[in-house]
Image (cartoon, rainbow, N blue to C red; front, side, top):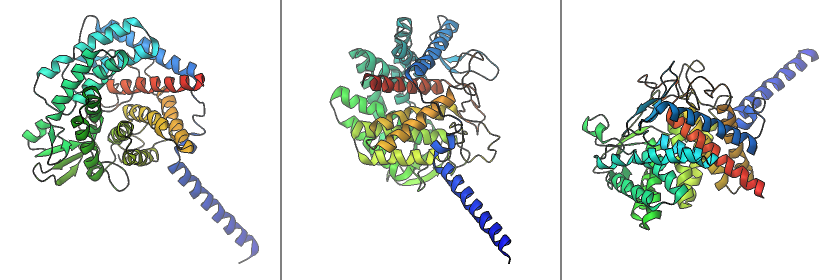
Length: 420
């Protein structure tokens, strides 16, 4: 073999090695992957403009709702205005929560008055039989934000009643909260089911412990979080959606999905719920295992993201890249990572999570995902339940909720940094 051929082979090997290194770097480092697409850092003025955009959209929605006390849920494809629902479903509290966050970000008293009005519409849910674990979603987003911003004891009292209702679903043999009682009755996920979404409802129990001074609420929350770590998280730090337990022995007897592509696939919003839930658990308890879990879940999520930091609805959908995104998952994770960055004492990691969250928010705030003049929502391209073809690639209220939550969190961070 002559010298020229050897040199060519050598150069080819170098090129292959470099390409492999670059591919691996992009696979594991979202910061590197995004470098050429989104370089700008958020400044306070930009964040306020984004919050003001949400305020304008909120006022537009209030105008279109008129005197109705129904809360927005989705905007069907091709429509302009929200389809609103009477209080009762799991998304009932998000509209009131959006109003509280918009008020917090703008100090608009009209929005505060509307927040108070829509928060009150949710209280009657407590008069009905407990139908699901979603009391945390419903009451944390509404009454939780109301109490946080006003310290009104009437709001605190409602939160405690909601937490008491949620505790009735706790099974001490399993150590988790039953997610869907109706699915037990139908025998689909019987005798005891727990979904990863349920991590989001534990905050209500921690709040109740703080309000009441009683540890029984937080004890249940910790038990649920611990059992979920043990059974819900795969070796690669992705999560199952639905787990079915024997309600007498606590044995996990089935692992499956309800909204993901397949039982063993990585449903994007499920991973997002887990990241947010364990970040919150670490904030509430200071338990390092929750901190480590949140970081491992985040790593598994970030390395699967496409270049614009907004996930496909399921990371394992074989139709990718010709599949739909889920902006709601991106908003949930952006909010969670801003909190995680504030809890992490290690400077490189702290900056890494902050950088990832800011990139997610830049992408969500771009024309590709903002609704602009298309409709009344903040964001486009969220996906609720793709397998059932329900709420696919449309605006969904919880995407807007976690988007405004993330913006307000980022505003606070930047204000604190500016104050020095």
